[in-house]
Length: 479
Image 1 (cartoon, one colour):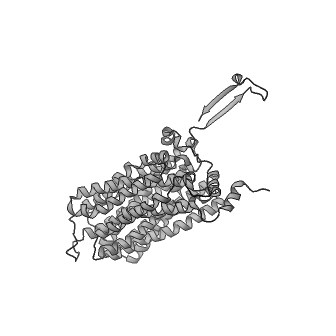
Image 2: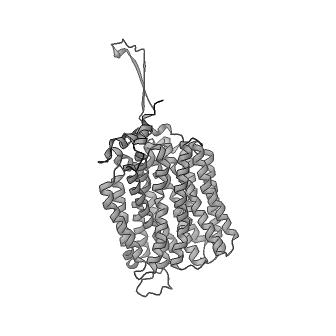
């Protein structure tokens, strides 16, 4: 029996190829975007620490409510540009959108210390809004990029690896931010280091990034053919397709994905934004310990993302489970596992070790959502993967906008553990509910509106000997 041509090509390009180098660059874009985003959650502790011993480092007089608004302000801008970014990345390609977004984000980060010290806290909020506006382009653009570069047999691994950069960036910046804040350069050095790294990435991406295999100048023909021939649901003409807005907005699987993401992002953003303050005020960790302990959930999550994604691709390739069962299984492992760990925090009283273990488990099990519902937009409509990511990720930003504000109203005393437990219980309930909805109503079937310009031509009453095609009855059905 002859092998399928795609299998022959896969064997020929089984090693590292251009697609993997593209994945590394987009992975690094995620690392840097999250480093610049998350650094403030540790930095703000040092920025407002009135017990700081260095008189040369400016201490900012921001109260807890103001800090909650400042931490959430990033997401005000982040939500606005997600859907436009998904549309623009499909029309014009993701390369230069990513480049522009990284440069704006890096410049704003570099200016952050000056703005924080010399301007009103509201102006600092506005700078974070601008940073959010630029970072709103990252997820949709990267998802569009993956849809063009990742063959189905490698899709879950590449997707999880690239978006695993969000966790690696968090793992990287939390301890580094803690050490930088405690160094002679103080908390401003956090922003200078991350901003300069973003500028460096932009220079490299300008020369090595590409929108698709067809636009890459040095990819070999075999790898290009392998990628293009395997992406049967992804059209090279997707940039000219009309956007099926009505079908997207009335799609049941799309709504299931959106609700799952909304619920998940509430719990995740609470863990990401508020846990450094929880560890600092309830357990009394200093800023260096805070950064190190806060990074533990993300170290474990990043490692599990790699393991889970390889297992997921193996299971699907071997047809041990259907894609639908696999996506839902990993979503349950991620969200329900997190819910159980957060509920467990209510039972550990003041046991520091138990609290750290449960917080670490909560973050680690979050890895399940990446081979789970988070990759679902690539299943539903590869031609509109960036747009779907923009819609889901953009509207889900409502959760990290509201979560710190609600936490600020619930936690009136930052040292009161019982008030924090209320916040954890709310997050656990949302984790459970969102994943349940995805399990019941979610789908991995490619939706009919993925190809809105497909023309089906039916020719009747036309024999092979007919010469007068004007007598043929041709019906063009536009799906």
